Structures are given as C-alpha cells and as structure tokens.
Image (cartoon, rainbow, N blue to C red; front, side, top):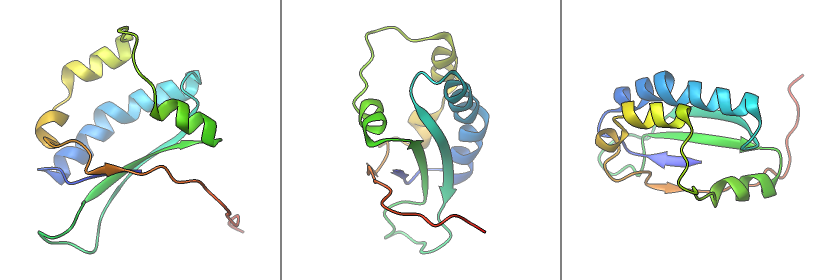
Length: 115
C-alpha cells in the first residue's frame, strides 16, 4: 500500500488512470514483475489538514517473496520503452512533490470469499 497526499487529488487520479494503469496492466499481462493486481483509492473520511494521506495505491502479489522482490527492485540502468514513455509524460513530481507519505507491505492472513 502506497499512501499519498497529492497537491491535486484529481490530478493524481487522472494521471494514474491515464498513465500508470495501462503500464501496470501491460506488465501484469507479461508477468515479468509478478504483480497480480493494482488499484487506487481516495479517502472519503476523515478529511482535513491533519490527515496523513488522501489517496493510496496498492500493488498485489500472490506471495510475500514476489512482493519483496518487487519492493527491493533496483534498475540495472535499462528502462523499457513503456516505462520510458510514462516517465517522459508523468507530472507526478509536481502532484506528489514529497513522493509517497509512506508505503506499507501487508501480508494477507485470511479472507472469506464473497458468496
């Protein structure tokens, strides 16, 4: 989970829909980074100046090992064309000048399926 407090919630949501969602979809289909889901949420409540974050994204994996490998990934200097395109178009440096407020790695312990 990647918690953020962007300067523009709308800008954050629109950029994630337009740039990051297609990139993650393509990478998930290719299977190389082992990500199985990705999503974004906006905070409805609480709100105000004292809140620690107003949006969050998540990266889902089938195993803790896959999540850890993704979290500790370091580039060898090569950036594929899809990432390069997103990096050339992103305004995330302006939208999130401080980056994510914090990121937490959770482990799913139990889940009941929907009926």
